[in-house]
Amino acid sequence: MPTSTPLDPSVPVRHRWFSPARLLAIASNTLLELVRQKVFYFLLLFALLSIGSSLLVVQFTFQQQFQVLKDVSLGAMSIFSWLLAVLATAQLLPRDLEDRTLYTILAKPVPRFEYLLGKLGGVLLLLALSLALMSALFAGVLAWREQTQLALIQAATPPEDLEAAVQALRASTFTPSLGLAILTIFLRAAICASLTLLISSFATSSIFTVIVSVIAYIIGHIQPVARDYWLHSLPAGQGVSPLVQVFLGFVALFFPDFQLFNLVDEAAAGNTIPFPLFAQTSALGLGYAMVYTFLAYLFFSQKEL
Amino acid sequence: MRARLLAPVLLLGFGFAKLAPESLLTRVRQSANLHTAPVQISLRQNLSQMGFLAALSGFRAVVADLLWIQAHTAWENTDWGRMKLLLDTVTALQPRAVVFWDGAAWHMAWNASVSALENPAQPRLALRVKAQREFFRLGEDFLLRGIQNNPGRQELYNRLGMLYRDKFEDHARASDAFAACAALPNAPSYARRFAAYELSRVPGREAEAYQTLKKLFLEGEKNWLPTLFNRIRFLEEKLNVRPDERLRIPEGR
Image (cartoon, rainbow over all chains, first blue to last red; front, side, top):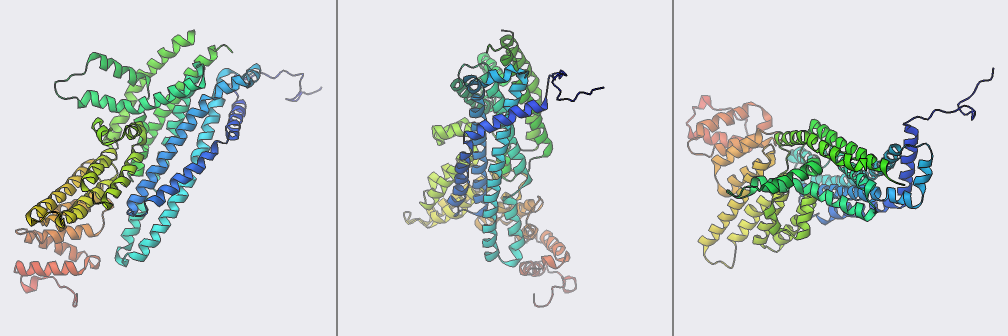
């Protein structure tokens, strides 16, 4: 009795509604397309910023030097990852539409949500890779400056104070909270990417997508400041008008509070980030990313192609 | 069409659903003292428009660093007024960065105060001393505000102890500050000794100071430093401690 193999064309292969292999194929192709656009040149700029900021402040105390180095490097990581997330995601759908790749993919038995997830996965891989490279560069510069300062301290500190001085130096450089801070940068960038994907799913041009994403990012950062001002800082006797209350409620409901995802300043200042806090922040961020991606799918599933 | 109706409804539903976790997270951050103070609208007058926008958009640390470098330039030019303004802005932007509070206090209480005392433009000594005291107070103010924002960090209590000891010569408050420093994690080992040394200089608290110094002495050789022996000898004389009850300080120390 002849037996059929899985590759036998006479045997119909049952189509699965979700396939990790298909998802991975789309994600890896998206990553490859983005890498081919020479996005990693920004790393040169990052290296310049990181090394430049560390050399610019050599006349400061070592605590101040490391504070500036960490602030600038982590700030640059935040900016670059956010820009990458917005710009890379905004062009995904328009580009695939323009060069007809989208039709080729969707003509095959690839569900639309799988296509969207794969595209977002590619951007997230790019973000992870970029942040890993920037973290490695940052760690290298930090280690280099630490060694330089260590040599200076060893040469200039009396033996009885040496241990305390070295301890103070170590406390100013590498702390576990730095790793958690970099993960929250990724998380924030992932939220921005999924939000951009949502906007892109109904937008008619990538410029519109980028502009709306940038505005949403700024609103997300400003809303806690505005809320605090209107609700707590107004002079006595000046009540908040119902219109302002409705406006604040609207903003709080529709926009993410990005300040909640800012753990970078704490880590750079040498404060410890408790792991439960990081876990709760991550869970919230994951919730945002999932909801935005699902909403993007809703729009994309109805889109006339 | 269905998606256009459904999406806002879902987004609204999620908006309501996320309010509880977000306020919980805010409370957790507040209880862990990790809730970064929001950027104050009043800061606008001290920042450029772009700087203010950058600070509002989550890049306040970078803006603070740039202003810190400007403050350093103001220090080099001995432009103390501008420096104070910049330091106020830096610490308002980064209230959780202890190095900025510490650096700001040091600049005011140690650098600007000396400059004020030696100001050649002011011939009257009384006015120069007055200006010097004002800069001490500005340094103290930075440290106290820094402590308010970072109650768990020993560095600022340590600096405050030094300020009270070296500038105000207020030994009681210096002792309290060093004692508070010693009680916090990662405090330098000298903080307890410094608290006791300062206490030994406070009139009326000699007996209390002697007991503290005695305790340190009995803890062993790690505390056996010349200042400890000097303060013990001083207090034993002052308190008229009987020779057979005095501590046996090793010969030649």
